[in-house]
Length: 479
Image 1 (cartoon, one colour):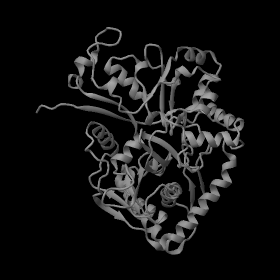
Image 2: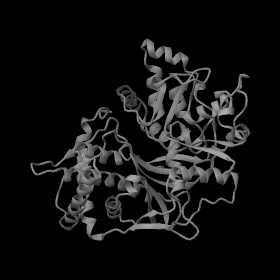
Image 3: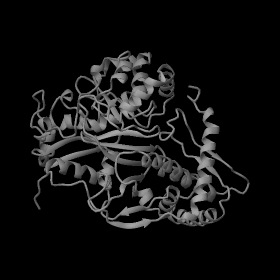
Image 4: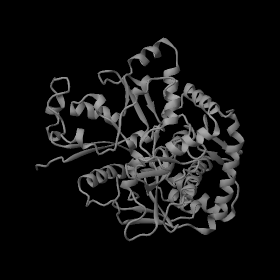
């Protein structure tokens, strides 16, 4: 059966920046920046920046970039890269010609264009914490800090993901240097395809989960996408065109949340946990629950325990789920995990329960901040679940509904939400009739159980008290 590939879009994990040489070749893992960075030198650099900047400057930086000072973002990682004085790193610094995203490197190779001609998208750039999300330009305050360590020409150019003037012609037969482009013969189906720049995976997931606008035409409730895969996040799309006149918009980013660009007309406001489903995978490995049978049996016991807790509000094990550091809502530098309340009677069931509960509590903290943002709507919300870890775990969804006091639904035709989101965004650019306002097709709905309210209030207080008590022991806490 014949077919034509009309367009090709990317979803990409963010943040990512890869240092390339003058020929566009990646310089290896030591010249690669990632949201998952937790290196000691970057933690120290982040703490140093935090001590140096005034509170007003930090607040201005946050409100313009939508990102706090944190090792997950590019500013401390770039400064650590350029300020390290050992000989090996000095050699790398000299070789790095520009920082590119993974998708822009691929597009440069496939189209045969020089890497300097391919920008990165506003979506990718905003996740670096260096972009002014209001004007879609590199942020002045961040640039003034960075230029003390490096030439700002190492940063890529910027564009919306729909860059038709350079990406409309598909794969080229020849590369920019006149040599044959091997992709011309490898992928003849893409010779006439329209290419698009990368979209952050979180932004794509929101669109694909039918949470790309305030509401659909037949639903007045504002949709918050809640995802638990390896990590976890809760996010809300808001309309905001690029502010070319540098006027101040009425959107204030609450501390604890991020604010990124989906594209030139839409923002993504939300919060993320580095550890979501990975917490459960850690517990399964720790307690040898890796078989489906053993884990299912464990979850059944956890469900019984949850019912008992909701009835009696009895104290249990409390967990801070920061095995890979903390992002939302505290963004505390050097944070790590902690479990409190263990006794001789504590079992694997208690720990698995604490893992589920801890992620729910952190997500609920994010959702409370999101629902407090004033930007229209009637104040009613609905949570839309995505990610295998949440979609396949009814207990986890019920716990989240109970904790937040908001209905949570699974949509039956929004599978593979991230890929679906990219397809919808691309189709919307190709054909304006492709609407992002879609009605939900509810497959499963979890409604809050009011009897659980008191239990979640106590659990939240216990977790906040634990985090406050142990945070002074974390590296970087003395800032």
